[in-house]
Length: 338
Image 1 (cartoon, rainbow, N blue to C red):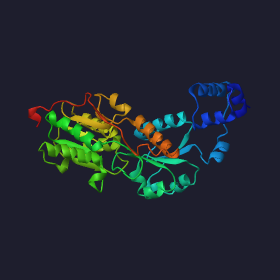
Image 2: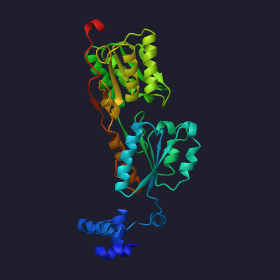
Image 3: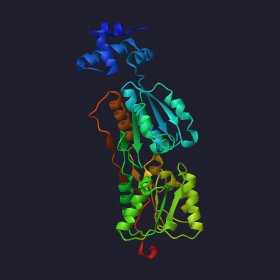
Image 4: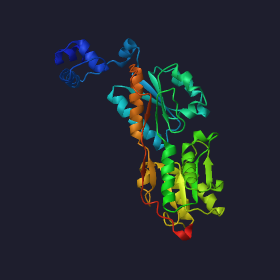
C-alpha cells in the first residue's frame, strides 16, 4: 500500500508539500500541485482520514439537516452540497430532523463534525436556539422564510419572487387568484404569502380570504394540492388562476382541475414555485419560480468551508436569485371570465 512518502518521492517533492496539497492548506505552485495529484492517482494513494482528523482536530465531515429526505427540492440542494464537499475532500452525513424527531439532535451533536448545514432553520428553532448551536460548531443556514442576520446564511427573496409571479397573472387580466401555501403564526414567516398580498394591494385588488388555503408544514404535497382544489370547486368558489407555493401543490391542483372538467390554462391559469423536474414534464408544462437549488447547496458548503478555515472576509449572507419561468400553464383571462 502506497504511503505519503511514496507520493512525495514520485512527485519529487517533500512529504510536507504532499500534506499541503491533500489538506488544501498553504501555498503550493500549480505545476507542483499537478505533479502531486498525478502521483496520488498513479499510486492509487488513499489518505488515512481518521489519522489526519485526529492530527488536525478536524473530521473533514459536515452534518446536513433537512426536514425531509423525500422532497426532491431538498435533495437537489443536497446534491450541490455533495459536489462541493467532495471537490474539497470533505464528506457529509444527511439527517432528516423535525420537531417530532427532536431526540435525534443529540445523535447529531455527539458526532465528530466540523460544522452543520441547516436546510430548514425554522424547524430547528423549535428544538434549540440557533445561537446555541452556533456556539458549539460552525453553522450555515438556508433561509427561504425569515433571514438570520447574526448567523451565516444563504437566502432567496421569495416575497419579491411571488409578487412578480402574481403581478404577471394580474397583468394578464386575472383578479380572482387562489393562494395555496403553508400555515404561519406571523406574516414574516411566509414571504410567499406576503408577496401575493403585496401584488394584490399594489393593483387595488381586495384580498379575498375565501381564496386563501394554508396547510401545515411539510403537508404541501401533490395530494394536498389536489384535495384543496377539489374542495374549492365543490364549494362553488369562482377563480381564474392559482398561485401555488411549490410545484407539487400545483401539479396536484392541475389534476383536480382536469377531473372537474376544467382546462389549464384556458379556464384556470396555474403557477408553482421551485422548478422541479416535474414542472417541465406535466401537460401543460408548468409556469413556476425557479430556485437554483444546486447552486444554493454549493454556496452553503463554500460558506461552511470558509468558517472552518477561519476566513473572516467571507460574506455571512449570500443572496441567490430566483427566476420566473413562463411555460404553458398561464394565459390571458378573457373579459367574460372576470
